Length: 320
Image (tube, rainbow, N blue to C red):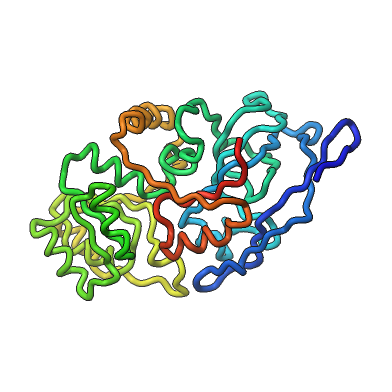
């Protein structure tokens, strides 16, 4: 639906995925709903430094679960869900961007978004790869790209811990990990790690937390390193699980450091220089699970948190 407006402004319909209210326990599709009667003018307001964009791809990510809780960085009940995505500029009040530019960054779960804070918005310069890659492997959001890079650059025994047995074969046969196991099927995680790592673990990429982290601490080698980017086992718990083996960090002089991608945005050009050639040469195996249509967003996000996706979970909103 489109209608004319004053000052030659075009007003169009704008479907949105609305966050209903703060979530306790495991999220459900009913915690979100599709609003179909909204409209938006395809013009940046006079004097605004922002952008009006048409959203193309939306990223589903585990961190979004934490934003469904009431906190200083919560989603706003009654408003569109906000996350990372790929979009095309329809109108610009900012000298750094022009109409027709492709961008990635934080945007709304809706067909069109008015973005007023463009500080963390990036212009897409390399379009010889699928645009959907800018929701994942080319922006450092999912854990999968980090695991892929580990297998390339460390030339070491690479192991993956996963909570779903149907993906163990995928990890070993398609993604070429040396080994993998379903940690939810192991009654004794310490024994399982000792079975695969009799000499201990050098590097652990932490994205699970809880009992898994506790068992890993028992099995780290002296001067081992732990990079922490998430703890998905804890996101849906009312009371987080404790970690009891931290003293082993002292005994073994283990270095553990947390990080988030936006701390390193200043290195983004170097990151592209590093990763793009490996994609072009086929050195990185990257899988996507693309849900079609904005209305599929709630099911895609809940499915991600349930482990139903196979690859990076993306929602296709519109073709360019």
